[in-house]
Image (cartoon, rainbow, N blue to C red; front, side, top):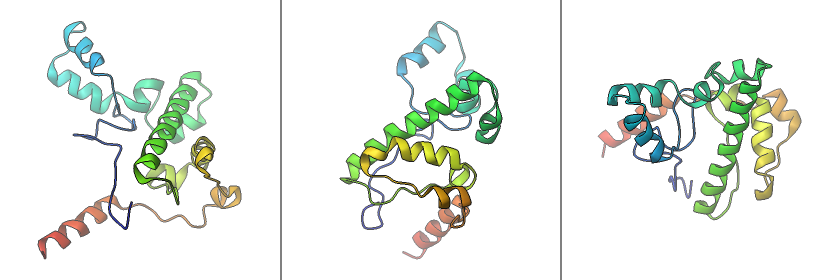
Length: 164
């Protein structure tokens, strides 16, 4: 954010773009979509369901879209999904830092911010070139965690718009 205003996002036209999520694909080569439609003969509805519901961490691992499940798994596919997730976040942090002209603070929210100190640690290590340093004790202890409430934040913004 710059002066409290969003300067960039990882998403594009839809939530499918940007970072992969639990079941959503994230950024994808358009050629993959053409392949799925033309060669695999997926219908538009099948393609939509695949990209929104069966991709992301679930699609890569074949196990689960839940980070805690993947972290607990000994399966190599779970490790690959986690490694790819951390790699893509590192790329996006670099892109966002470039858009902002640097980075003052890296904030984690939602599931990773509230429940995944191992992932926060790995992401900060990937962003060390930006000067990101994580306090291991605070990261593991979680004393400063504030649960994310995205629905409430959106509702508050909409209420503010109504008063304009």
